[in-house]
Image (tube, rainbow, N blue to C red; front, side):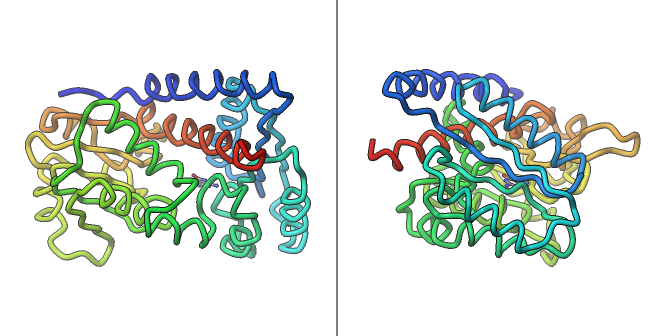
Length: 282
Ligand code: GUN
């Protein structure tokens, strides 16, 4: 069994981004990312801090816009519009979910598709469907990058994704399909879930339920990818997979923390660099 080291792969990706960024800076171009955080969800605060730290590390300019949970939809949309019009800001990210009363999808659609480094805008989602895209969503693309790094082929494999969110489950399934996996998406209405997951060569858990995946749901020798960022009964960070229960049954597994999370951020850096290059016709 191999524990996939997301931190290590992420560091290598970020080092490449940093190198390219240094080259751009010599031409007088600095990639810029604007991160919008509304409200005071502690998990979102941690994610946003990590994104800002990564920007610093690779040499990007980053700007944080922290709005109170009481912010109005109009305020938020006005901010997005202002950032859309700034040439020194290449990527705009609004941390989701937004507090109650604010409309996630209206904000996503307001972000210019050229600056949509999350790849959540319907124009970018559509382009991913047909395989003609500039940006891939950060978490699924980060997972693919880890699979590539460890020479894990998807071609012809049975891939099962648990979870059907727009952020992870659905695009994850699409990226696995692009690499010729045979993909099944499971969700809360799925019947005989264990039967389906037990058949998976590659199992991706993205449901948000702590330690949901147990050994009896996993095929011997499977590759297990844990997208969860949950808290167990003691308040300790854990994933959607019961790591200790599952680890001896699989060939590869991602830990939480130190697996998927760092890769999400590394992909965000890649996307922001790409947005900057595209906007500068490079
Ligand atoms: N919330 C959970 N994951 C993500 C992500 O990748 N991007 C944004 N903007 N919000 C998220």
